[in-house]
Image 1 (cartoon, rainbow, N blue to C red):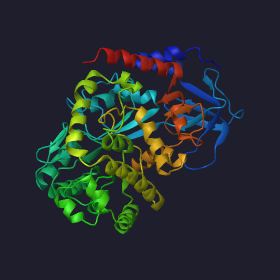
Image 2: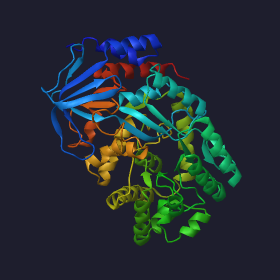
Image 3: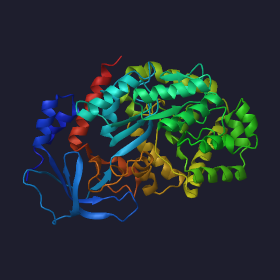
Image 4: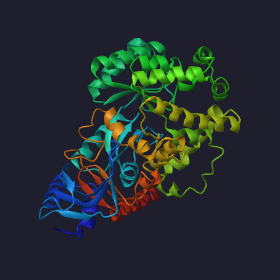
Amino acid sequence: MKSLTLRTAIGLFVAITIGAAGREQALALESTLVFSHVNIIDTTGGPLQSDMTVILKGERIAQIARSGTLHIPHQAQVVDARGKFLIPGLWDMHVHTVFGDWLPRAENITLPLFVANGVTGVRDMGGDLEVLKQWRTQIAAGTLLGPRLYIAGPMLDGPTPRFPSSAPVANAADGRKVVNDLKVQGVDFIKIQSLIPRDGYFAAAEQAKKVGLTFVGHVPDAVRASEASNAGQKSIEHFTGIFEGCSTIEDQLIAGPKSLGQNVSTYDAGRAKTLIALMAKNQTWQVPTLVWERGQWLIDDIDLSRDPLTKYAPAAWRERTWPMFTRDILKDMDTDPLPVRKRFVQMELDMTLAMVRAGVPFMAGTDTAAGVHVFPGFSLHDELALFVKAGLTPLQALQTATRNPALFMGRSADMGSVEAHKLADLVLLDANPLEDIGNTRKINAVVLAGRYLSREDLDGMLRRVQEAVATSK
């Protein structure tokens, strides 16, 4: 059996763009990877599986059994994982990776940051479709290092969209046409934004169902959260429409204008209970992006001047996107007094716990890199910590980034837990995340589609990201 003497070479192989011949040669060289004496976290809720051996062959988990009971192939690369904990690769289910000139393409920065943080898959909720398709192809071929991509492409918004990477919708005919066009172009799902008109929204929802595309996103300003749930919207982002639906003046808020202060002052527990029950009945997934919400509503109360992660921010984010976001948030969104906004942030945590207890399904998403100082990869661990702060158990929080995304995407046979025959997307941790969710940050190694990345390799990736940031424009 081989030791880990080749791991640095393997790390260099996966960290840079390579040719197909080189990839085949490397995979042949290290076709079998073994974790011995490892503790497996059961994300389905079962007990900890201690002192296990996990054998990976190619991009799949081949065998799992008690250590000492399996035959280890002679040419296998063996990782002694005593005292360490194995979890499925993490998913961030709300990201934007390339978003017009707001988030210019930076695959040598954004994508490695995900992987270095154990994020082996992302749901891109709106972006430049041709670039995303190119990345997806390159990642699948092994010529680009990055997480698995589940992509929407252009977001369906109103006649005059407020964001780049958007498709304008003025009426029902537009809604149907855009859905059909995106189906042909190869998107995985349809993403809705806030300004789409009612008739365009419902037409798009109906057409998405006809052509077999999942329909997700914001609850539009002109639509009730209850209507969106009943129309089959599979996930609601940022709790859009939820607090309006809990308000005694919901009709007035739908007609507009609306404000955060109104949501806080007119919140009704009875209406909330009714809406939560509907979300549970319809199994309407929630992706509250708590880290983004907190950063938005408290942007003038959080000191980001000493954020050590700034070293991973390209010039476009620091000099253009973040100042623009900050200016717009302070002008148009953070118009209520700070105590009101702090109260609302707590209300979102309370809503999260109430919904989870009622059986509403949740997923972790961060809105990276669209938020100010919401960094790819790093922010997902912040999101998990906020779920625990809301009252979820560490297991429930971990499930929002592992088991639940697999269920949502219909990929439970391939992902979401550490089991034989599933994809070899894994994270090896130095400490138990069920004892402290913060331990998901203590990454010892990552396996991406069967490729082993040691801590040394991950640190090298982060150094190269810093180098790319230093020359970014």
